[in-house]
Length: 145
Image (cartoon, rainbow, N blue to C red; front, side):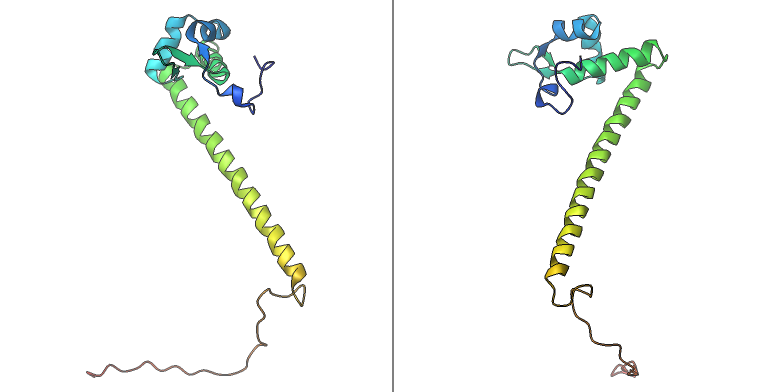
C-alpha cells in the first residue's frame, strides 16, 4: 500500500478508487465498506453518477478499522471515537507545526531588525534612563461632593 504513494503525496487523498477496488485492497467485502460509510467510519466520496469513491488514505483507514475490530476487539462505536480523536490530534499537530514555523519566522525577523538597529543588543524601541522622580496622585473629587 505505502509503495505507491506517500501520505504527503496529493494522490494519497484523491477519491478515485471504485468500491470494488478499495474493498479488494482493504481485504473486505464491498458491503462492509458501504456499512462503514453509513456509520461514518470511513466516508467515501461520490462520483458524478453517485458511485462511492475511495482514496488510498481511506484504504489505509479501512485496514486500521479491521485491525482494531479483529485484533483488538474494539466495537464500531469505539473505533469511530478512536478515528475522531486521531483526526483531531492530527489537526492539532498540524496547527502546532504551523505556529512553530510562524514563531521561528518572527524570531528571525526580530534578529534582522536588531542587527539593523543603531545600538545592537538593546531594546528595539529606545527607552530613557530610569527616573528617580516621585509622582503623587490624588483622585479628583466629583462636582457633587
